[in-house]
Image (cartoon, rainbow, N blue to C red; front, top):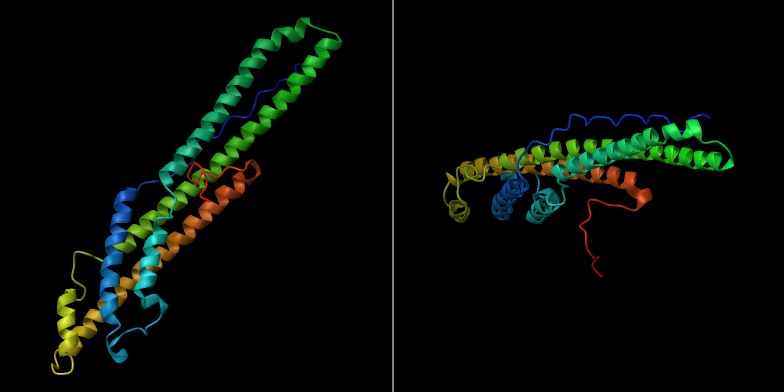
Length: 251
């Protein structure tokens, strides 16, 4: 009698997933600090004569845009959680494979001694289970791959966002001026000729910090949403969504 079982494919090793970067608390703290600096100064920047600005006023110079970017940064998935899910999937695949191999070894002697219709029926059933195990191991491994790619993508996005927040340099006065000093210069701008070059330099520094932060925030937002979409697409057939908190949905 032909043995119905064949060795399952080996579960692939975890890929090179780099999830190094700031903790989520540190990342969000840096983002909040950057948002605070930019929003505070942009309210004063709007009072400058347009000819003193390096860029025109618009949506990207609105403090609400900066605050929204900071809020959206908190939607970035946790790369460590994604990597842990990938590891759990690979471990599950290994367990399925190990159980299948153990069962095949236990039943091996039986196929050499048992014959007849009942043996054929059992053999067909065991063969069907083997095919299911093969498919499950493959699905688990492929899903783990998707999670690993998502983890690496999101981790890179987090590092990029952290760099963008750091570029705002919250500890350094924008253009060498504290908000109260900017207010004083704005009030004296018409009477004090020295106010204009100082305010122009302040505006240029603010605009550069703003540009770097918003660009990094946009890239990280796009990368995080793309990674989340790929994970959800992979899990859509099973209805699972690891990026959604557990518990009852809000009404």
